[in-house]
Length: 259
Image 1 (cartoon, rainbow, N blue to C red):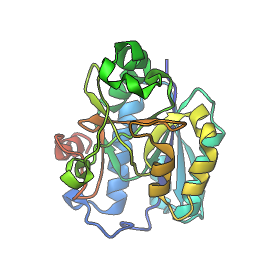
Image 2: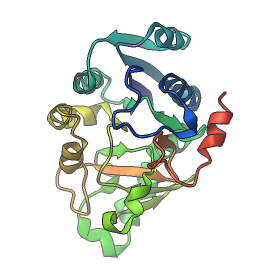
Image 3: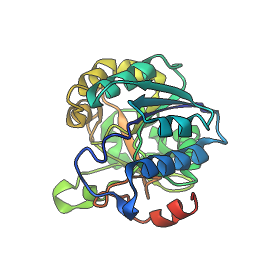
């Protein structure tokens, strides 16, 4: 059975890094609270541990997190140092754990870990090479054996004509999983995968360069030493900015069910 280590970076000082509007008129602290509650409720029935990496958290937010069974760290970091510290914590995790590096403004569906767990447990069934159509056997790789990275949201811009890519798509019990070639700094991988790509992960923390991370880490249809990154359709999380929310999910209802 998969075991999860969630490492959540959070800071309630900055309202929005890119000054983008927040949905549903949520202030930053309310946003952090509802996003964390959604994540905690989604994972609570699965083997897990949670590390909160706070960056100069206010007393109010420290008290909030202490109300949950988490390890709370509160340091003076800044965005780049916070990313690096998060990755250093991930490097100390068990090789077999699934490490979820997540930012504090991602809202999760109640069944997020049910879908994720199903993909991990049944990966060979869903993507075994012997099951692949002969038209894509040119890949010459075992997809069920490549490092797997899970990006939990489904960004709507990847469906715009100028961003379209050829992608592998897999059907699981609950949803489709689409191969993606770029992510934010919210994604999941095993501890041994964190170690494999240690240099890329640490280098990407300089300037919070998710473009560098994506170019170096995620495969298209040619794999080499790169990883297979999958995102669910529909998303099991959403980045809480008005213009990039995962489609096909009633996120307002998700919030109303939490408060």
